[in-house]
Length: 405
Image (cartoon, rainbow, N blue to C red; front, side):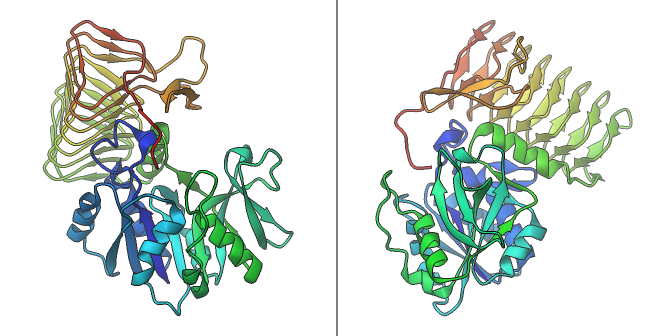
């Protein structure tokens, strides 16, 4: 089945992590988010892939040019992010006009067995059952999983099954992509789905597991999902005086020094160093060439390439961008005293993360001074600085005007 993967969006809700790279290229475990979508598609039956790129397109191209898969990969450019139907329209010249095609969101995780079921249909849409469907596009479904339409964020949802951004379209749908702009000014793929429901027997395929990765705390959740699948593997240099428990991967070229305790699932990537006398636990990624130094504790966090937490610091439930440098004694708060879910600013609004424990989101190149403190839910902007001894209590990122995601 020929497959289109949508990976053109910048991901403004992920700022500051997406200031310098597109959301689909953010790390989840040992590869970018979009690579998980690509691999799941291939496992499910994709015979050819067209990846739609836009913001920082060369980052996506470079990654897949370096990867060797048995399925051909082509790229289509969506110069202006005008919506999902417009993205598929950019990919249409790469498709066989006489064959059905699959469309997947490149910023979502899908369980492979359910995706295989989707690939086995002639016309279908992926669904996922949630308790709060009013926040999503909700599918209209009759008793035998036939889809009759989709309603965006309804006050009275027709079902609890939401649109999971995975579609099988008949070949004829390639000529339906010139849709009218929606109220928000976008060309929506759901309009193409609505026509397919009118003219074809479209089936709902319920995913056992699915995650839309649109906000920073969902990137943490994505890493928790994929790290839970780790199989222990030690290829790097691990001191005899280090203790590794549970599923821990130490890639070739990584170093774990004396006195370190690692409680998996933990992934320590090539070129990374941990210790001496550090504690790494939870679902943690220590990225390529990242450093966790003396007497540092890191829990349930992602340290991206080149991030350094040098010594005497605590980082919990947090996302640290590339080349971040935490000064000695930097502490991250990850729990509210009232026990309520931590909130974070998002496009000018304070939003609940739904997580009781949630730390900070740190842009690329940030530097903190010694003995600084960062409050739960705080974001620091790309290349920002924190003074020695400073307590950062409030969000520091200016989201600016809304932009296409």
